[in-house]
Picture: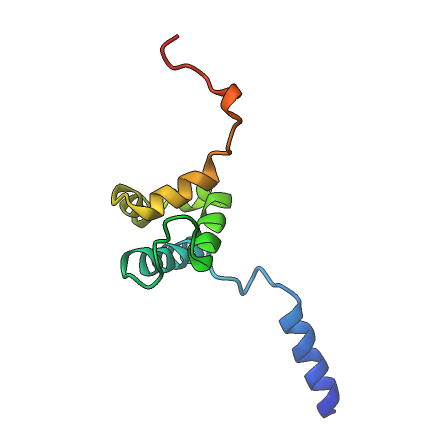
Length: 107
């Protein structure tokens, strides 16, 4: 009976269950809090030629989920603060184009 119980627990943990997942708004606020901690509290270095691994992970995740995360007031406050977070996020949201593909803004 003990082995059957542990197998059941293992299968529950391995199977995602939307019923027990936190709401998207909670998940979004957690990643925004993590970004704030990572960028604003000096927890990670602002490297001149590269990006810290945690900063890269956060900016990639937020860029991939920007439509959902942008619905949060706290995300907009983080964006309004500018700085390294906005720079890193922008690099991931807007894909790089070759120099020959630049579009002129003046017509």
